[in-house]
Length: 259
Ligand SMILES: Nc1ncnc2c1ncn2[C@@H]1O[C@H](COP(=O)(O)OP(=O)(O)O)[C@@H](O)[C@H]1O
Ligand SMILES: [Mg+2]
Image (cartoon, rainbow, N blue to C red; front, top):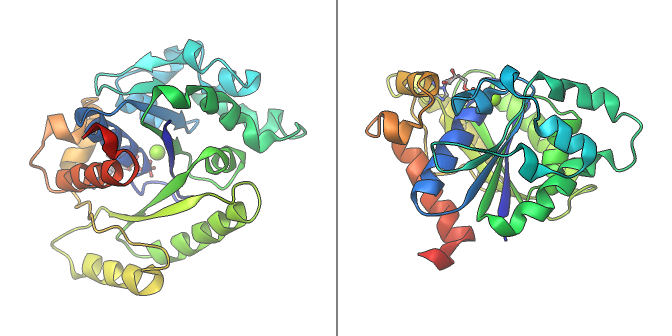
């Protein structure tokens, strides 16, 4: 039975898609069955796997509309994970479902029948607090919040944590905050150190700041462009370890029986 993780923040450019790709690749390399779900109309996750979103006839949009049919849109990736892809069609869903009953449970209807086939399902969320992210939070068992170690990071996290608390009080009382994942940490700057310290002071341990710091490295953008994970593209890059260690942590905590 898969443990479902939403990788989410309403801030863009904080490493959500990068975390989804590299965590999926690391977990797959460790022998776990992974389904990655692109829930961003920009299709960033789909692009990162080397698939052109606009060329797809069927995407997660169709599955959400029909509330089934995950298998029929599923694609294989070279990371070893399966993918439910997205493209710009997904942007329509918020409007189309505006009056639908239980519209926050559409993704659950699509993913729940697939849970038995996987160890983890990772959902790459769009940078918003709209219906799509609410759908991800409703089906998820846990959420990881990537936070770039940069100016103004704190405000964004506070807003997102409020949203998580609301979801826990309504649509999904079992939602667990796995933690904040510090990303884009520039080792050379004091600024990154300071942001990190502020994060710890403001949130830890109520909202755990995960002890896996993803350092800033140009290799992440290069790997994405090459449609590879950091683990195959530049496994010694600063930051690659964080994703390996995060994967190990997730396995020990949620799926140890295959060790
Ligand atoms: N640790 C990192 N160091 C440097 N660049 C990164 C890092 N993580 C991600 N990036 C790059 O930053 C950009 C935004 O990352 P992305 O994962 O797409 O963020 P989001 O999905 O939150 O919008 C991408 O170009 C990505 O390659
Ligand atoms: Mg993204």
